[in-house]
Image 1: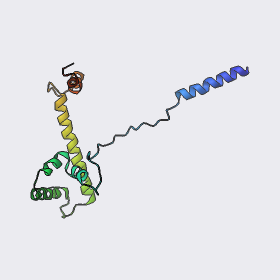
Image 2 (image 1 turned 90 degrees about the vertical axis):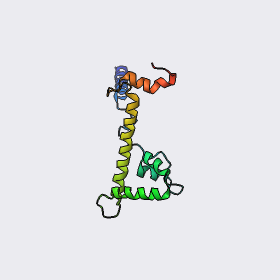
Image 3 (image 1 turned 90 degrees about the horizontal axis):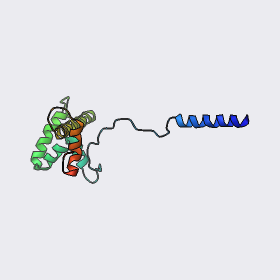
Image 4 (image 1 turned 180 degrees about the horizontal axis):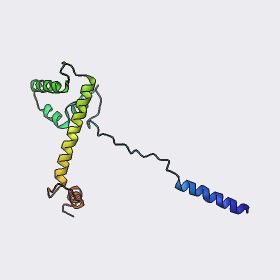
Length: 143
């Protein structure tokens, strides 16, 4: 009888262990993409802030401008950031602008990616289109 009790207890413990939740926590939250792929180190350079403030594509354009043209364009952007038109940019206005620039970049990237995957331009991406757009170039041919 004692052996049967131990067996039942052993099987119960094994069952509880097998059916229990895993101890590993999985991160299921959505994390927004970084504002820039540059290193954020203000003591060395301001490329991270440049990308975050302007967006990566706009930052590339600014890199090609003369200092006078850059100053003129930045003045126009600051006017857009200053939502209450009081002549100052608040921390909240700057945060909103950076979020806007990040979302704009994300939507533009989705549009660009979509065009590259929707090979027959029907507004849908089939598995075949995705597979060919993503992996077809690895083999130099369509699957």
